[in-house]
Image (cartoon, rainbow, N blue to C red; front, top):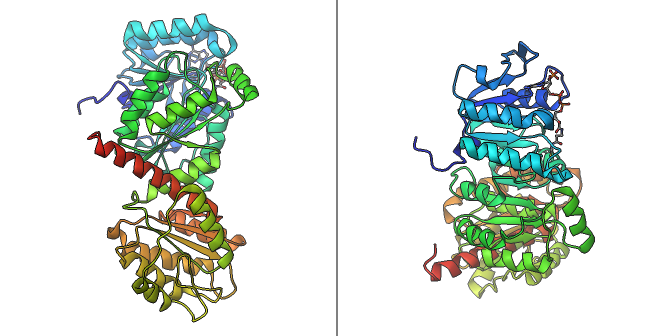
Length: 467
Ligand code: COA
C-alpha cells in the first residue's frame, strides 16, 4: 500500500518497539507492552530493555539496534536523560515515528533536550509524537500503545487530547458510557506532530466519523495555519473542540501545564468559527455531540419532531430547541391526524407529540412510524419519562427495531430518558445499538443542534463549491 502521509507509521505501524519496557507490573513501560498485547495489536511487538531477557512472554532486546526486523514505531519510556541517546539509535535503525512518553522536557523548562530530540528526529527523517504523553491508540488495528486503560471500546470517534491525565480518565469514561473510539492521541508538548497534522490524517481515515479535541492552546504564530488547515478538515468531518484556559487564571494554569499559549479566548472563538469547528463548553457536551455525529446521519433538513410521554420534558425540550436554534415542525392537519391516531384521546398530536403518561410501546412505535414516513419530518427526538406502565428496556428495544427498519430514510434519531436505574440500562441498550441516548431532553436537543450547525456550515461551503 502506498503511504498516504508521514503519519501512517503512527496509526498503522507494522511493528512497534517499546524502549524502556519494564519487567515490573505497575510501571509505565510494563503497562504499554501489556496493553499492546491485550488490545490484540496485529503487528509485531519488540520490548527493549538491556537488563531483561523477556517481558510478558516476549523476547526483549538490549537495544533497538539489536531487533532483527524493521521497526516502524518506537514508544520511548525511559528517563529523560536517556531519551535522546535511544532516539539516535532509533534513527540509525530506520524507525519512522517516535512516541515519546517521557516527561521532563519543555513543560518544565528543559527546552534544550526537546530541541535536541527534534533535531535528531529531523536528521534521520523520523517524526515525533510528544514528548510528555500517555501514548497513542488506534482501534481498527487493535493498537493500544498507551499506559491508559487496556480496554478501549471500538467505534468511530477520534479523541485528541492535550491533557494526559484527563485523556486517560476519559478513555475509561468513554468505555463506561458506551462511546466507541477509533483513535486516542495524546499530544503533550507537540514538539513536532501537532493537533492539526493529526486531524488532517483523521479527516481521511475511513474509521473516523467525528474528531473530538481537548485543546489547551496553540504554539505562538500557528493560529492562521490552524484555521486554514482545520477548514479543510471540517469540510470532510465534524470537529468538536473543548478549549481549556478560557479565563485569565485558567490561561495561567495552561501555561504551566503544557507551555502552550492559551491566548485571548475571544480570538480562539473567532478562529474556531472561521474554521467550522464546533466549540463545546464541557467535556460532557463534547462527547454528547460526538455520540450523535458518530451514529446518526447528518440532518437532511431542519424540521424536527419531538415525541414524548411527558408534557414537562416536552416543554423543556421545546425550550432547548428554541434556545439552540432547532426549528420544530408545525405539523399540518394531515400530519396532526396521523399522530392523533397513535395516542389516547387525551394526548396532544401537535409538536411535541405528547403520547401521554399512559403511553405504551405500541404508541411510541406508531408515532415513530408516522414521523419516519412523513417527508415533512427531517429529525426525530424521542423523550421518555419513566412510568410504571412502560418498561424502558422494552421501549429501547422497540425504538431500535423501528430505527433499523427505517434506516434508509436517513433521519437522525436522538433519545432522552429520564428516570431511575432502569432508564440507564435502557440507554445502554440504545447506545450499544448506535442510537444516541441521553439522560435529559436538553442534552438530546443540544446534540441535534450541534448537528444542525454543522449541516448549515457544510451547506454554506457547498454554495461556495468547497465541498
Ligand atoms: N533502553 C531501554 N530500557 C532501559 C534503558 C535503555 N537504555 N535503560 C533502562 N531501561 C529500563 C529500566 O531498566 C526499566 O526497566 P525495569 O523496570 O525492568 O528495570 C525501564 O527501562 C524503565 O526505566 P526506569 O529507570 O525504571 O524508569 P521509570 O519507569 O521509573 O520512568 C518514565 C520512566 C518515562 C515513565 C519517566 O521518566 C517519566 O517520564 N514519567 C512521566 C511520564 C508521564 O507522565 N508522561 C506524560 C503522561 S500524560
